Image 1 (spheres, rainbow, N blue to C red):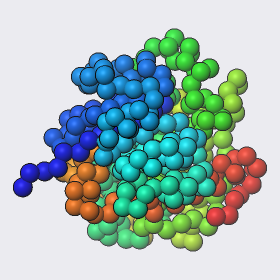
Image 2 (tube, rainbow, N blue to C red):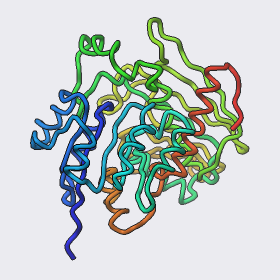
Image 3 (cartoon, rainbow, N blue to C red):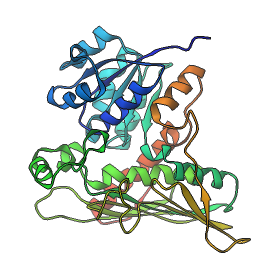
Length: 357
């Protein structure tokens, strides 16, 4: 049976991950990229030139793009504080939406996004770590009961900073980073900037996945106050559950980027259960397991994920083709709990108090 060809458009290039997602779309055999839209034409130039997208398919008005190209699926990469605004703009066109992480700037905004979706249309929140082999293997082992009931999750997430890399992770110079900082939404509080909002959702959302969808009782957060900046570059968050404590740490300013060379501390997860522990670090091809039966830390191979779990475009289209619900961190129930923890952390950091969920 001939497989459906899905028409895909990329709208709003605030987040540099748009380039990565468009490349996945271009390389998918069931995708035809029919349009791009951004108010700043220069931000689309890299995608146009690198991915071979025809220049006449790049629009500065998202409405014109949607009306002329009629996509089935839209990739959205707006600033964190504008996710709700852009979902409300695009959802009425009857498309499925893939929104790059985080879910939203607040829980209220996240819920408004869900309500804005037409009946029968899918909203997916992409958490890139869901497609990393080591983290998928860790979840498989948790699901198989290898370490018993999960009691604690530790996550350390970050990179040198959001301006050090563009599409396809192309590295920028220190001079470029310094010149872009004053103008970037990543460093503006009103647009949802800061390492906490950029990275905390990774830990809280995958942490919720590892803990079987359980919610914490309360959250305590501390953030740094870098001189000359209005947002944080480092946060430490403790979530208290009925079954134990978990810690989620975010950092812009790691010594190296983890996809090139893991910094110290290493970026990734450590999961402790009643019968053992698992460490799962970003981009490794293995995880390390300890159990009561085998106390010596033992590497366990983490092969590359099989289809349809290699990337978000592949997974979304797989689910749409089969009319299946999304599973894991990209699903709304898991992402919403992750957002709920982020919201509590923001309030805790602002007030200096523990916040109950």
